[in-house]
Length: 236
Image (tube, rainbow, N blue to C red; front, side, top):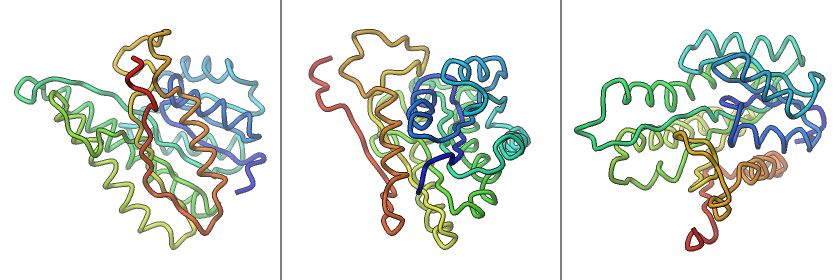
């Protein structure tokens, strides 16, 4: 893919992996739309990276399908096209399964799993036109279960399965589909505040570089599922 002026849409792009990836793609010559649940947050994050000629911040709650439809329309109206989608929005509630509330369960399912479907469903016709790329942000929790993670594991196992099946459905349109499964990343996930103690972790821009590598891959080759983890977790 010739990346110059291609357009990427990143959900959950106001901080962390989403914002770090937006920066990397902008530096590579792409144009980017990032979304957040609050318009003010999305616009502020976008302004921190570039002016409106290269990046826009838009409001979208991925749990609301109409929000995602509206987001795609805004991207088309502003940039005239859509080539790459990164379904990055997610959240985590961690508790023993007998203590996990219905609200916590539903919030994760609606955001982490149904939201990924909403984003693809809203964007797939544009991706067909562009012969584009759809990437989901899963987690190593999508293959490794752990105590207090029943709800989160369920969503990330689901994202991995959804993405791999979607890859088989969409490759006949020359749409590439991949899922990235990171381990520990230095982000604000689950109300964490990154600090010097997170230097051993994967950094958000590292995931952005991985996305960039996928986009640069020869069209004949598709890395459909990528696991990535810190090199030295013993340094934490």
